[in-house]
Length: 71
Image 1 (cartoon, rainbow, N blue to C red):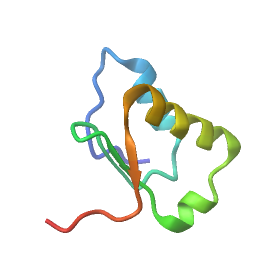
Image 2: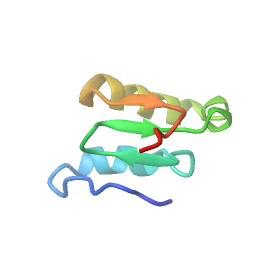
Image 3: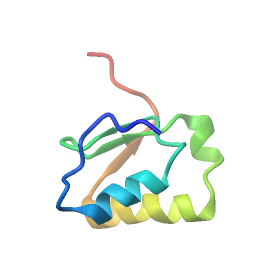
């Protein structure tokens, strides 16, 4: 899995939540609190991955998008 953003080393829990979502996370932007998942990936997440994703959204205020914005 590739993390495109550095997760705070003090916050191991957040890092592992991200890590356990692999290999379905296509891109994570920690500063903007965005997680990019391809639509096809989103449909194939396991129960555990969905739980982790829900926890990231609830606890840390992350939002999930399927498109990476063109800059």
